[in-house]
Structures are given as C-alpha cells and as structure tokens.
Length: 395
Image (cartoon, rainbow, N blue to C red; front, side):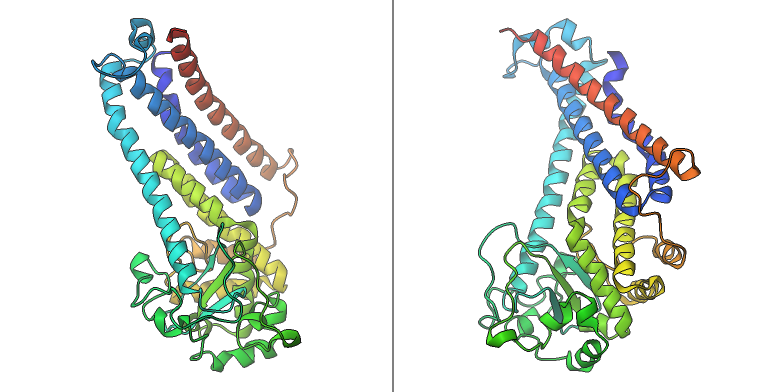
C-alpha cells in the first residue's frame, strides 16, 4: 500500500471544491444532505484509518495486548515509517476522541439546561422569554423522559438560576428564575396583540396563539406536544425589533429548522470537523445551506421572500445568535448578505437533482462524483488495512 495508506487522512482536501460547487449550485436541501453525508463518511474513514495506523505502528512495542501477527514485518511494511507514525497516531487519535466527546457533551448540556429552564412554562411550540437581549433559536425536543406538565408548573421547577445558560454561550440569559414559573407575566403585552391581530399565530402554524396568552380551548389546558417535540425559543428583545410580518418569518424559519431536524446535520458536521480538520469547509458550507434551506421554507410558508430577507437582516444586526453551533437560528453566524441576496432573487429549483446538460447539472454531478471518489478511496484504504490485519491474525 505504501503512502496510499494515508489517503483517508488527506482526501478530505478534495471536499473543498465539492463544497463550493454544492453550496452555489444545488438546492439548499440537497446540498445540506449531500455535504453532511460526505463529511460523515470521510470523517469515519479517516478516524478508522488513524486507529489502524496506530495499531500497526505500536504492535511491536513490548507489553501490548495486540496479536503477535500484527507486528510481523509484512504487516508493518504496509505503513511507511510505521514506528514513527504509529506513535504520532496515539495523541492524534486521543485528540479526536476528546474533541468529539467535548462537542457531544456541550451540545447535550446546553439542550438539557434549556429544557430544564422551559419546564415551568406551558408545553407549546413557541416559548417567548421576557429578556431584553435579542436572540432566538430552534430547540429540538427531548429524546426520552416524561412529557412536561401542561399549563405551567410550580415556581422554579428545575430552572437554572442566575444566568446559568448564557455562560454556555447564549442560552437563556441570566434571570431565568424570574420567568420559569411565572408563565411570561412581563414584557409581552406590547406586541402580543399586534402579532395576533395581523395573523401571526395563524400564519406561523398557531405558534404564537398557542404559546402566548391564548385562551385555552374547550375549557381544557393548552395542548401538550410530548417530550419529543421541539420548541422555538425567542426573547421579547428580538421581537420588539421586528415588525409583525417579520415575526411571522422568524417563526416560520425556526419551525423549518425543527421540522427538518437541522440540529442533526449541524452536529454531524461539527463532529466530522473535530475528527479531521480538513473537513472544516464542509462544516461551514452545511451551516450556510441549512440556514438557506430554512430561509426558503419560511419564504414559501409566508409567501414573501423580501419579508424573510428583512427579518434576517434585522435579526443579524441585533441578535446574539445561537447558544452553540449545533443549534440553528435565524441570525446564525455566517454570510448573512449572501442569504439576503439569495432571497431577493428567484427561488431555487425545487427538483431534487438538476438536469445533466446544464451548467447547474454539471456542477451538481461533479460534486456527486467528487463525493463518491473521495468516499470510495477512503473506504478502500481502510478496508485494505483491515484485511491485512485479519490475514496476519492467527486463527
């Protein structure tokens, strides 16, 4: 194999032009799925290859628990400079494991604290916080556990106190305890009536009407959505900066993030970039295409691309963004002018894949071919190494 054994570690470099082509020429939905799958495959192959190189390079060290056949000269010949690269692979693999574990832990902790802070509020689709700091994001639902109580809860029911959230990068800024059990008593009266009069609740799928001061239906409590349903978290500080139509765009945008589970795409590319730094351009590209995907869904839902563009521009000027990169929001960091320019232009083609004999089609098929070649080359190197180790293992 020679130096080709290291191909899975450097082949992610070929993803850079692929990311650019997909980002510019594919529909945001298709580009997000394609680039996420590519990043996941390349990261997995490079991590497996790194582990195999470490195994081969350290198999001849005394006292290791590995099979004796893995230290044979024929096996070590598959890896150039096996002793050096094997020892270097040890801290590299440890760094990958630590970085990925830290990303997962931070993502889970922020989500957990956010859900705890919202536990005392009615379990409705939109949670409006009386906070002067403008921010909004889509909070995915829980994966397990009991459904929250309907219609509010006891004061201080599990909510973090004294600004726990924003120490984690922006979630639920200080003073959560003031509102966690109080069910939004302050700061919302100025805009609730206007939002409902202009149909914000109806156009956003009942989000506003079901979560802010709406009368219970049929004499019962508000509708419980279960532990797996996501929520849109937004502050009065941001809503005060938006017009009624722009609020509808905000709600539609965040609901699109929840419906398509964009947090999973963002988490996958974050982990891939931690596993191999060469995949960082794909992480940036997916962060952009996921926002563009939600932009297009919001424009289709409210029927005005220009309104969504205004909402994005306003939110980007005043908002603090999302608490962690793995959560999505209207004012996520990135090329906001490009998003606004795209919304001011025509909508992208809704077809899943463009025709071959067009400039867009050629770019799309080129991106797909680059993805396939990169993934197959990485997988081939990793599988070859596994077969070599298997052949050297005594039965």
